[in-house]
Length: 375
Image 1 (cartoon, helix red, strand yellow):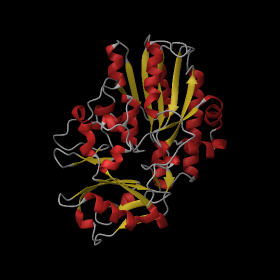
Image 2 (cartoon, helix red, strand yellow):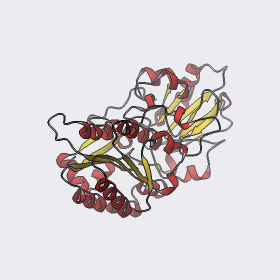
Image 3 (cartoon, rainbow, N blue to C red):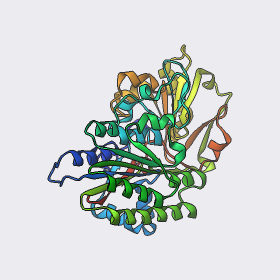
Image 4 (cartoon, rainbow, N blue to C red):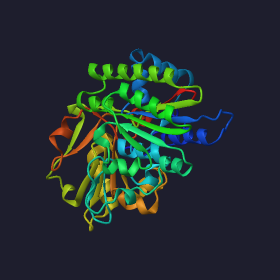
């Protein structure tokens, strides 16, 4: 069982600083950079820096800009959509904004909150994620914001938690994303924009990141990025980034926790996702003993940390005390290209997913930060 956090020497900076850094350039000139008037981010779900560079021949524009003037930044942990997008739009780590994974348990109600589905009754998105978004901070300065994404995201609990303060506009294509952005920028003197594109991630989950369909989707993103770069005015800039990378998990690297395993009865709730599992134990279980036994069962396939170890080592960044109870009593971090499934609760859909993320490998954590226009 690995016990040390992996080092990512090629990553410099945080994903949480991408949109906040652009917002600061509207507010004032700093660090010798010219002040911009209209800025934002494009988030391509699942476009890890490792993947972009590995497929550079299919993304000549983006890989070229990344090599010449871009940066590779750390998405933060957990390396999953809910956590990363909230970090982008609030400018703080998952431990601070509280969206600590795909699924976590609400310590007050005891219910599991799936951040990408309707929240349980009694869980208010505005209280669950109370940090002011950058869009709200912009509104305080009379700077309008727009968030562009698929129409199905409009008004969801997750959108209310991370996009409040921005006007949401639905779009079904990257071409329409660009049209909406250009229309918004042309209508405001100063503005903040957020564009989200999920297709690459969706294909990766279904088919894997080596599939030709994924490569085709990458080429589409690259073409869009080149068009966007040309469409931006001298006082406008956008950062193209991602929420996480992705690793393909083959069937022989699926690790199944048997329903009759002696430790399974000590788990009250199984949450998280296969690459980062959060276990909430029965109240009479010794957490340290459970973690040790789980580590022996999983071996080199995963690392097992207790809640106190996760918090003390800063795995999820600085964890606000109000959020500490959301962290699993024990957290399992898949290593290599393994993924952990619960025989009692795993769905057929989850078991069929090829591309996955959530853990701390470089491929999952490293994402590009590519400046377009005058960014």
